[in-house]
Length: 147
Image (cartoon, rainbow, N blue to C red; front, side):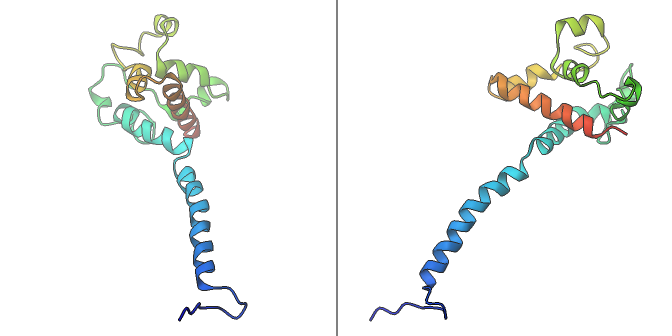
């Protein structure tokens, strides 16, 4: 005997369950994407690579900062010290490394601050676009720290 459970509208329980499972299958990928948005990824990389010197808050008060000859920059004041405009390209150059930038700003580079571009590149399995995306995400995160 084949009994099918039905609600008062004549829908079988199997159809309801199938629809529910399908709904979750369609909704869940969006939840995963929302969970790993660029802002979250930039924050994660900032915490993993930058916070040791610049601090979680970005104010230059990380646990290593007191041991450095040149104190890390207060990243929350970049816009204020740049006439109200966030210096996006300057921050990008500082993170990824750039030989022209390095010649002009020697405080940032191998002697005082690691150049993270190569690290991100290697950590991204030598995928340049992934590394650049990670750097952009960190820059966006730093921009979100502005006071």
